[in-house]
Amino acid sequence: MLAVSCSRLYGDVAKLSCSTVGKANRAAFGQSFLPTCSLPSINHSRFFRGNSSTFFGSPCSLDRTSSLTLNASAPKRRITMASTEVPLMRKLLSGFVKPYLEKNPTAVTALELIRKEDVGPVCFDHFAFRTFGVDGCGIDSIAQIFLDMGYKTRDELRFPAKKLRALWFSPPDHLYEVDGELENGPAPRIFISELLVDQLSEASQKVIRKYTTAGAQYKRHAATASVLNTLTWPTPSFVDYQQLARESEYAAWTLVNGYSLNHATVSVHRLSQLCDISKLNQFLQKSGIKLNSEGGILKVSPDGGLQQSSSVADSVKYAFADGEVKTVAGSYIEFAERLVLPIYSDLKREEVREWHRREGFEVSSADKIFESTSSEQMGIKTG
Image (cartoon, rainbow, N blue to C red; front, side, top):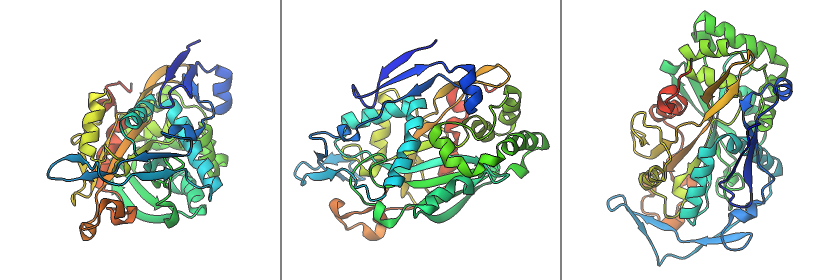
């Protein structure tokens, strides 16, 4: 038995305890990650500095011509826990985050580092999921639960070279600006992509349909599978995984990870001292976090308003159905800074709200962010 214990994001509040999964459990739940980890229930109020419900932080003044400066004379900002006006949504968001952190030690470390360095709230900009666009297992399979909770469908993005399409969804307007942090803070945007399976080779299509058909009765329960950290189809064989990996690393990732949260994104502009993404990137790299270098560490939209970076995905040991245990790509963490739109440039920082900033996503940047799970970035062999 493999046992690993580490104190990460939650300090002494929680420790990741990892143990090898027995074959019986893997067969029962269609999940073959080795090891699996469990986090005890977390009292989120203990994330906050000061007392259990509030903390205070100094807002930062960002001058693009003179880098990052701290405004010591600025009034303190009072941050309180988010209200429970949508308890189901909060439980669901927390449900996505828990298994994500269990399998992604880099995300845990990055969040811990940021919280130690920055007094501001750590909020999520968006969550991202990957799907197979076939047999009802595509975008709609996981989007519906968000639509039911008031999310709105926004823009479509196309990635021809990767044979992908994506939609993003915005949360209810009143949840863009709420107190709190992480899954208890402002509701994140949702970015869901799907592989255009019909554009793949016949061999790869056959592999994908083999699994999506086998799990067809569960396709309406994608969100449940994500929260439970399991697949809606049988544990794949290594031979099938290899077939997909040769043609589409996105397909191979989705085959073994299913509807797991692909990445969560920190809202950089909501931070205090680290609210400049270039400074944040330097801080993370200096602290040992490996960032995705595809197209450069910093991915900038053509208009300059959306700036993004991401870690390289964690490597995970996976036990395939045919007995092979191999290293595969897990999840990763992203960082996004949305600059204030030119029309609102005269606003003081404390007056700026999320809707004053650059909205949406950028194909060219997202295309490079996808590479966070590539074998080249991770330095692993897929075969």
